[in-house]
Length: 291
Image (cartoon, rainbow, N blue to C red):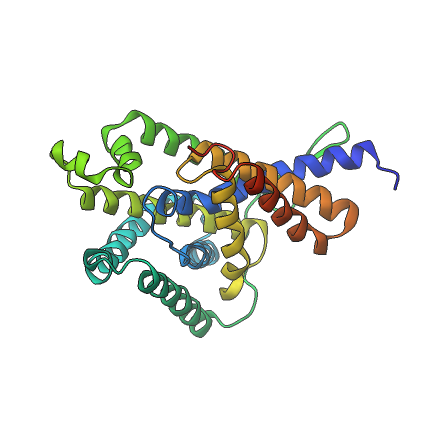
């Protein structure tokens, strides 16, 4: 098969931008699952909720979807605090946070999807923004704005999260809470409070990721299911608890999916991507940047 160099370059560029979106989708799971050992499989459902909030405000008031998602961050943070409080009091506090906790988040995913179906139906919904439809051309390279803008904002979000987690006291406590909560207590820090803050931050990222998703493609309430396996695969591939590893894994997966879809067809992309995951874990079980 003859490979066009221009086609290959554009496939890599598209893959990097897609990987930036995957990183935004996975950021919350990297915090909740990788750092807190909370298997929040409902996270993609909250991302779709963010998409619909961006859609509602965009169609009614004309605000940019990303601006809407930023304004909605405090609401998603508060929602994360409520969800964690219910989870903690119902399951984690009694040592039942494994199978029953997983069922709890599965139920949240199902309820979110059903509510969105009842309110909006199963029709695809999309948003309008000046950068949707255009592209930046540099020589033979094409950068569609609907992919480029979310990718840039996603990278900025990742940088902010990494700085917060590595440079602040609360951030370092978040990174330590799943490793040694007793040590935190000796430092007069409440591990439950730290977990609540971390989980709330993880859910707040769903607001931005939801806006990115509805910019990139129209959404339906069940669209979150397509990302459940992918986000956990990226989280594990990058190394549990490592945001830089998550970013590298997301970019790598995006490039591989894009190249595979371009030259061999979209149906092969998931198989090749998850094949890479299995190969990496066979060679390095802790992931790319795992401890």
